Image (spheres, rainbow over the protein chains, first blue to last red):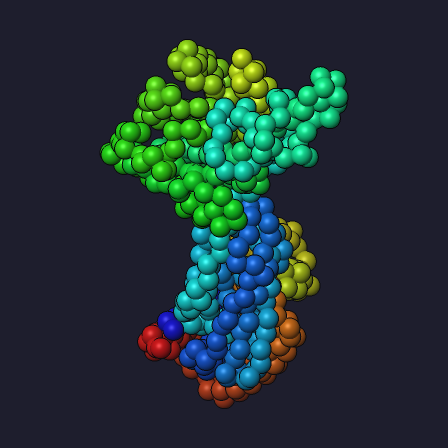
Length: 424
Length: 169
């Protein structure tokens, strides 16, 4: 523990000196007497103990939370000996916002006393938030002397992206071989009636269509559409971001990816994730709750990372990017490298859809409103539209999403247009 | 705690008005009060500026009033001065902080004990000084007082330097 005199001691000396000077100049003894209590108070310096003899423990109400959820932090201080005035301060990460109590506390502890200190924080941004060091300052009662130390009390809080509510999803054009929730064009076992054909030996009696059989005086059986699942690969652009935290283009992209992954996994689809940050990082497509965990862990660490390396889409293995997969690319379309990757994917015949969270409202919110900013935003919007049109001409479907609007509303138009395409 | 500091500041600047109620003392007192209030809210150096002005106001009031030394009042004013600095500093520390059980009570008890002890000490010291002053008639008394003041300040500075303990733990 580092002990030092506080600025208050200097203030006391200053006032004392001024009183003595005034007393001598004015020739009045009262001024000297008036500063005597101050100067006598300095005798207390060095009397307080300055050794550290207390322990700190920290507990958090939840170690894994979603963005927007609140966590209660409880710090317990146990004193081995008397501490006249102990000040504790716990700096908060920018990903946390104090919503209840204080992250600084003042305690007076007697020997063996245990005190609990609680405060509540709201997790505003995803990530691994480290609640690491508690700064402690042991004051004497007068505040003339203080000992300082830092106590590491490591604790990590995992803040997962908040999934946005989604009910309708873009349907895939091609299905996979496993059982799922999509009605496939192929007939076989299923629930949705598809066609009627003549009975052949081996057909199940319960599939006999009695109405048709009675009408045509021959046995007919009903065939059903197969119900299959699909492979969905979410491709996340982490090359660059715009806007101010906790609402950058990357933050909203990750929330959209979390929502899409949750919704597709709930439909028993196999979902994979490719993070494009120059090189690729990926999560192999799979289904189930474990895959949900894997994708959320990957989204937790997704961040903009500058790299000179630019890998080609062709380098992604087939098991990561299956040819029949529906690829949903989530990108603000700020980096031409990602656009090149999209063109490459479309050229390879992937069922590709681009969800583009618009950076313009996010940047507009982060900067001061002015006429020039307004003009710049309008020009930017025109440029974005031109680039989107260029991609659209190459057969890539682009959904422009204003992050202030619900994701479901943006995906609604896409769902209808894809349904028309599938019908054709 | 900030309210307590504000009350002490008010006592500090209004006491000289009881000694010599004049416009100049009032003006100086108002300026001192404003600085003290700002200092309580913002930072200790501003408060020190206010206290320096308040001491100037006190000196002016004593000069205007003249008469015999009022040592009892001076001791009380000194205790108020000391408590004002400590309460303002503590108020700043306690602002926006979770306060543990018994902190305020222990602090108030400590200030009461400290005020009583330093007040009594100052009274004893002033009584001793008066006695010595009455028995010994020194020539060049102001020069001796100035030298004594300087020696006292140097002694305080040396004591503070000696009291600065090295790092431990």
